[in-house]
Length: 238
Ligand SMILES: Nc1ncnc2c1ncn2[C@@H]1O[C@H](COP(=O)(O)OP(=O)(O)OP(=O)(O)O)[C@@H](O)[C@H]1O
Image 1: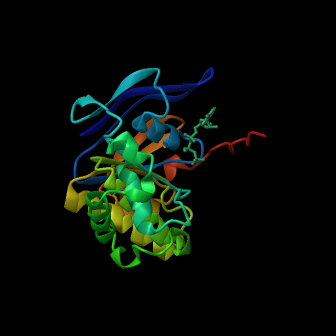
Image 2: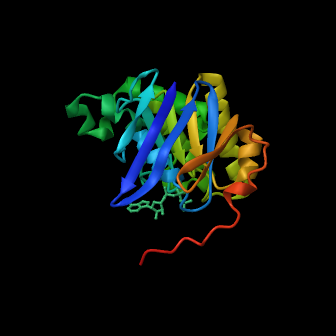
Image 3: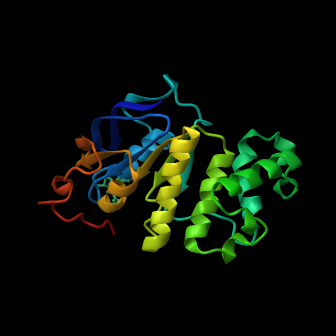
């Protein structure tokens, strides 16, 4: 369903992705692994339409990716901390509300609030719907962010290091949730991860990037050392 074909991305004169092919099926969690600077986030941004590709195509169900096809979940959880969890999830529906309603998000229509409550149920947080998002733990906030992505009704969820800021137990829980949503609801989930162990436990398949090239693909239990060995350290930009 999500297919990235022959993706080439440049930043300035530098080619970062050199013709990458990745496909994620419905009902599948695909983990993208690779060392710092290997191009994982760039690949995800290309999938989201946030980075123009110099070459290649991104399709969903064999049609060019539309803006409503993909929902994003980030490492840094962008919730409005003083609003309720429910309001934050309702915001996922903004793109499909008529303009006058999206300009007054304090008054989300009842059907949107009901749908958002359903999304919170799906991530196991219906009982916290009316709590301020800022009062929830990091893992809970990430689950609210996932509920907001569900409320977008996108068939593809793109998650950029969704558990990097979480403690080990919360990380397991959030990845298990993403896998369950993929399997139970037929979503295509592409998650950039830094932890091969988590990919082994939760992903259906992995793709390994090294210097902008796919160097391994398939079984999450395969050795992934080649992704991380003999590398020059990334030079930090000032
Ligand atoms: N906006 C940008 N402008 C210029 N170069 C960039 C930009 N974003 C990323 N890069 C460079 O592209 C390369 C790939 O970066 P990317 O963030 O995709 O890697 P990554 O595998 O996600 O790394 P990390 O694990 O550190 O997040 C790096 O060398 C990075 O410095």
